[in-house]
Image 1 (cartoon, rainbow, N blue to C red):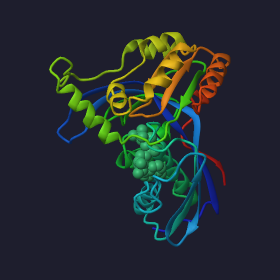
Image 2 (image 1 turned 30 degrees about the vertical axis):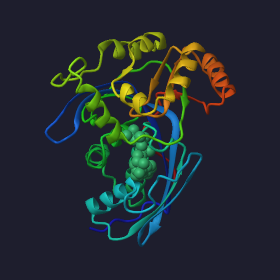
Image 3 (image 1 turned 90 degrees about the vertical axis):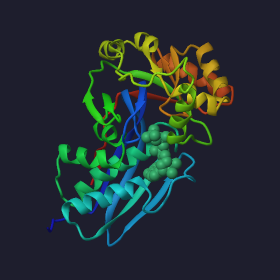
Image 4 (image 1 turned 45 degrees about the horizontal axis):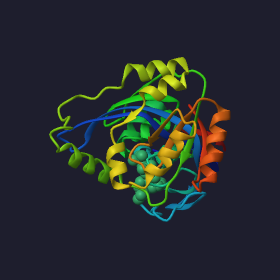
Length: 309
Ligand code: ATP
C-alpha cells in the first residue's frame, strides 16, 4: 500500500502518569498480575519529533538521566514506529528524536509515553490516519501502560491495566513529584511483592482487584482530601522494601503538608498530593531545601497529541 506523506516533520507530546490507586491481584496464566488501576496523566511530558528516513533511527536527550534508555530496536518508541509501518505497509523508516522529562524506570510510564507519542507521530507523518481505535489496538501490543499514554486524562484500567475506561475528574489535582536515582525494575518489584505475599498473613491471591468507588467519587468531585484518604498502591510495600531509603522523603512530605504520599507505580518516584497549587509550592520548597529534587505537576492533562507539523 502506498501513502502520500502528510508532513515533513511531526512533533508529538505525551504525558507521564501517576497511579492514584493501584490494586494488584493474583498472577494470571499468562504470567501477568491482574491489576486495577486509576491513572492520572500529569504535566510532565515526553516530546517526540518524527521525520522521514530510510531506516529506523533514534536520538535521545532530556532533563533526566537517560543512561538506561536503549537507543536501538529495544526502544519502545522504535518498536511503536515499526508496528505502524508494518500495519500500513510502509517500506521506509523514520528518524525519532526524543526529549525525555519523565524519570527513566521511575514508575511514571515514560517509555510508554514515548511509544504512544511515536504511534501518533508516525500515523501523522505517513498520513496513515489509523484512527484512535486502531492506535489503541497497536498500543496494547506494546505494553500495559501505552494505551493510557495515548488516552490521557483520568481513567480506570483493569486486566493488565490496559482495558481502559475514561473516568470523570473535576478541576485540577496538584502533585509534587520526587524522582530518585537508580530506578526500579517493574518485574522485580512485582516479583518482590509475590515474595512478601507468600507470607500467609498477607496473602491475597485469588481476589479480583477493583478500584475503590471512593477514589472515583473523589476524582469526580475534584476533592484532593477525599482522594488522599483513599489512595493506595499495592506495589508500595515491595518498592519500599527494595528501596528503604525512600521512607525519608515520604515521611518528610507527610510531615510538611502533603495530603498523601505514595510510591508512583512500581517506583521509585514518589508522588505527594497537595490541597492546592499554593500548598504544592510550599511542599516543593520544603523538599528541595532538604536536598530532594521536587517537581510541581498537575493533572489531569491530555494524552499523546500532535503539537505541530
Ligand atoms: P512503567 O511505569 O510503565 O512500568 P517506568 O516508568 O517504571 O515504566 P520506563 O522509564 O518506561 O519505566 O522504562 C523502563 C525500562 O524500559 C528502561 O529501564 C529501559 O530499559 C526500557 N525502555 C525501552 N524504551 C524506553 C524509552 N523510550 N524510554 C525509557 N525506557 C525505555
